[in-house]
Image (tube, rainbow, N blue to C red):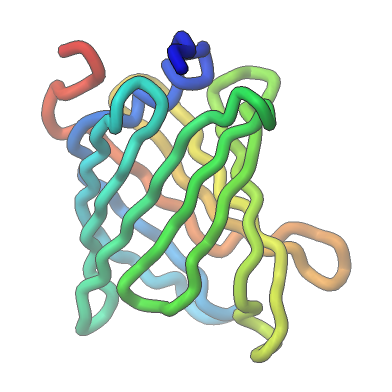
Length: 165
């Protein structure tokens, strides 16, 4: 099978490189936001997939993350997964670019942080501000039907390791 990379695959290649990040996370309404920092490195797996591995410091412990992203030409959607050393759940992703093609919106389902023992809908979005700055936002769908953002991370490219350089 010899498919040509699509514009969606090329969009993902923009992630390739080394990044420094600053996170702000609200763990509960009314509590002060927790600020952390870390690093992330994305690499290509051929023309179709990217894999990001991150390290972040949260409180007294360090967390590691792995994100996989690709574009499924048959399903006509982005697909992927996210795991972290801080929890046992594998977060499956499916999503689309917004109309500006600057933001990838990824839907997932995982354990509810508010109602133990139940599942909730989540969205992560990756938005390129420019080639060297991107923002990852995470939100959860509340029972009221509104989305509540609980995490925002700013990523800044640290080395010129974009695809093709």
